[in-house]
Image (cartoon, rainbow, N blue to C red; front, top):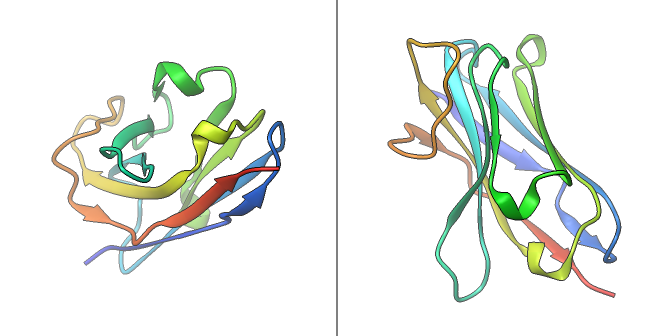
Length: 125
């Protein structure tokens, strides 16, 4: 059973940066594609970014392209989301999720097997 724990959230001013971490335990992340999702108050959850199990493929929703960077360190069993040039509309609870995969070059935003409990990111002056 894979457990995921997000960390790194908090309050940041517009234009600032923040790095979220998704630490896994109970199993290695080696065979899992990982995605970050977010849910703002009163809005549906949306996929923000995903990374393949090999790290060779990454995807971003249009609203964060050029500002967010996803990465993974399989040796540390951790996935990161570096968020720069943050905007108030980035305010949300951010979740990481994992999907066990065979193809190591694809990532996904659906049918996730495991979810973390989320970390709150607030962008405000």
